[in-house]
Length: 251
Image (cartoon, rainbow, N blue to C red; front, side, top):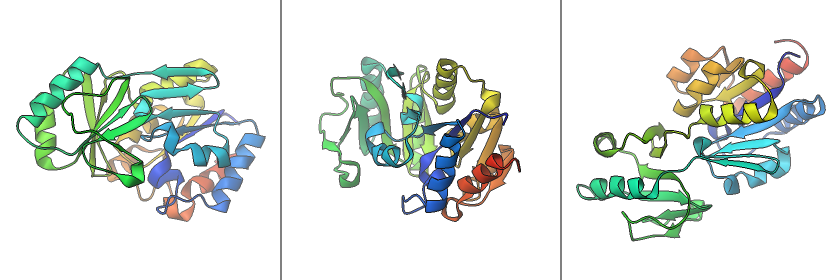
């Protein structure tokens, strides 16, 4: 097989809409591992929220927080937001609106609104940021908030819109593709030897640059337009379908 590594987004790609993994998907991933392929999660989530899937799948590496935190064996690479610049940015934003803010900092989600499903810690001190490495700033999406973010975001940071619900602000050194590139360099595998699965804005560059870029049918149109192939939806085992074809030489 010309491919050596399988890299996949999780939400709305590998995972079903109810966040479960089908038996077919688990079986296909297990056969990939048996054949010597490396398995990598590339996700906007922090590692703590993928641990249950890691225990089922046994990922060889993880590109988390959109590339702000990369882990492979005992090696960890972090691409963080400068604390002072983050506080200046939030100060400007909070001076003209009252956004719902959450911040990934040192493995904890701090938020000015309680998100029980994300196990957030209440923080009412924004624009001041908690102490520790700042991996990502999240702001509940609206067109107003996006226009203000565009006005105030510094050159060292960028943002994307995730699932039409969240503005994700990160260091320009942190993106899924940059994280994947750092990982591939660590394991000595070229992007042409990688298969990537995705559905959303952050998946466009990996889909373009990896050897085989696959979009799921439920993905946004811009992702499907740049993919080498479009598979079935996340609820119809789209990832498993492609993996089975790869394993049997049908693709």
